[in-house]
Length: 194
Image 1 (cartoon, rainbow, N blue to C red):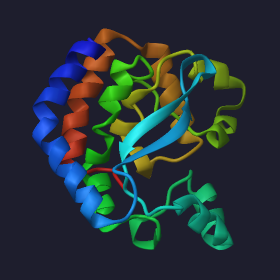
Image 2: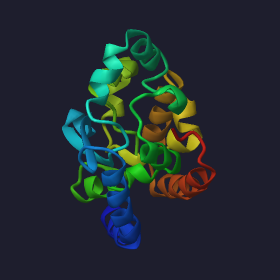
Image 3: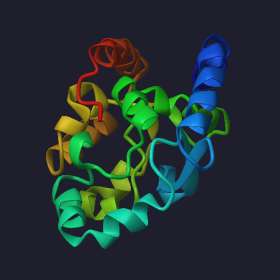
């Protein structure tokens, strides 16, 4: 199902994909795609692919601002777009519409991700799962998941852990189908995306 649907999505979204490549390139200096190490199933590290939404050396810019970095960590590794100096103009649009996630269909084709599953996390975030880390990593991460359709960026840790583990305990074709359908509604409403 993952492979078939990913191929369909890639073909269907190809014109948008190509347009976004041009917009990202014209908006700011740097590569079109952003790759970052994330933790996948069984703790395997892989490079997640997204359209680049931030300026170059964005991590350095954030960490050099001690107060802002502290707020970023305390806010479940998120910042409000209005105060985030790293996000580009096109990047704000891509994040609000979730179009920055389109390249992750290639992660699915490579077998690193699933269409539905817990959100792939950074190494720093794994500590949030404590004794449940192994359980969390027992399934493939997804492009969308129960956390994303339950509030996404509006839901931080530790509530996010509960949502992700709820999915792991109830993973099924039916539940995945429900999450995929609900994802379209959430994306259209732009709820929790920033």
